[in-house]
Length: 349
Image (tube, rainbow, N blue to C red):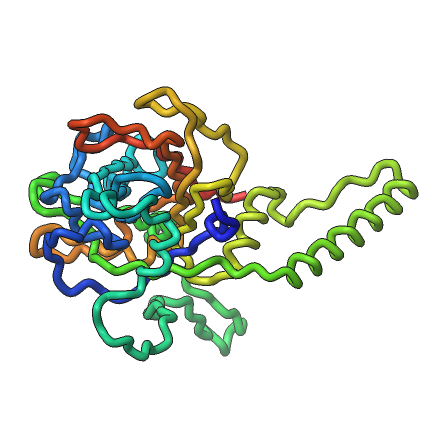
């Protein structure tokens, strides 16, 4: 495989999808939310048995394959199922690319996911600043303590009225979990749809050279300090976790990214140490890391149940890692294959 194919592709939120149609090529669209081209099929959560809305759809064909290939990632919106790997479902579906296979020696690679991601068949529009701001309202407590002078002619004592303690539970305010009525799951439950645009992760040779020089200098200084002080300990980030520090530092280089894609020699960004799955549940073959969904996606997840727009706050996770079969196992008559999802919860250190 070419060197370019080993680069990490980053996904960013693009234009809002005004209306969705089940066209013949709808499986080639990379998007957030909405419905898949599988006739509005929503698998049920193995934990609570409720329907799981489509979270992300990714068109990801492989090199030297006769198949179109699309990944459908669903997540349960019930608060009791958040941050649990079992409540996430990744379906891989494939179609034989008959027209392409007859006259081509190899099928498209996943790099075309990047090349065609911004082509919606329209003229490019000048976008305004995409930064979102959250409007907030200041809450003032009117019942404040007051003091007044009583019997000033007698002893000049100042009597303070008792402070009324508010009954608001601050921890509950921070917990944005929103339960959805059970009858709403019988409706069309889905996230507001957006296109996903794609770009390569920025990484120049000069930046790598500079980073290597810094690392070399750091290692030299560390050796000198260790010689002077046998009790020296390697420095850790303030929160004490190197995995999180690595995660944050890499994400920070390309703000706004909601997912990372690299099926060949790609490495996931863990929030904390965890064993990687290595066996396909379908064919017992080897698994490859393919895709990572980042918590920056949560801001754009606005749930819709039928005609009711329920807004955001219906899903939480730290990060989700998608592992797929290296052999891309598929048999004639298959409709889809389940792939492995590992969900890590964001922890407070």
